[in-house]
Structures are given as structure tokens and as C-alpha cells.
Image (cartoon, rainbow, N blue to C red; front, top):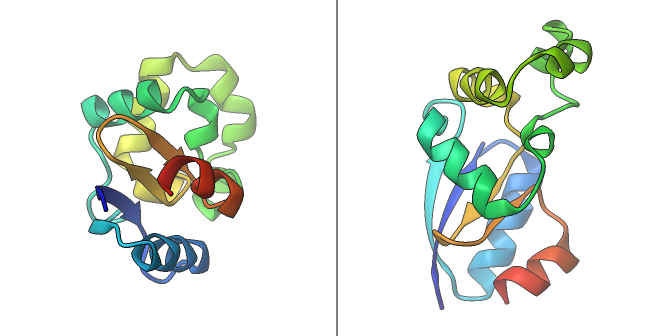
Length: 119
């Protein structure tokens, strides 16, 4: 099928489900460990733009780092560029998995969304 890049954390159950779902449908995957190699600001900007989603959808709002940094309140005061810089500085802040074919982008794993985008 198609070649996809997946930014993921191997120990994350949601990431494992997404990878399994994509592999079962014949996609060739390039897996990128998001904690060790978070996308840089330029790549992240491209992913956000291609996703059609709001930037805040890229934040892992249930993660410890998000809560420790009290980002729920702070994000409102930050510019988009500052948010991008923050995300690219710590892969634990990024909602995962992020899947892209270079054009389309999905964030997280919902089977019906994957069915529409990646079948």
C-alpha cells in the first residue's frame, strides 16, 4: 500500500494499536521514536498545517509533562511559534501517534478516522 511515517512511543498502547492496524492493511511504516526524536519546529509546522487541525490538538493534554508545566493555562498566552518550539523541545508533550504520508496527517488513533484516511 502506501509508505507512512509514524511518530510514536513503542510502549504506548495507543501507538501499538495504530501501528498494528496500519501494518494489517499493508502499509510500509517508518517508525520514529517521538521521545528521542521529536519533530523539529519546521517539521511540526508542516504536520500541523497538513493536518487541518488546531495546534492545541497536537498537545498530549493527559501527559505528566503537560500537567507539570501547567500548560492548560499557559498555552492561551503563547504564540503559535512559541507553542511549536515547546512541542519540538519535548516529545512527551506531543499527542501520539502522528501518522503522515507527506500530505495527510492524523493525530492519535481512532479506528473510524484511520478507516477514512488510511484505508
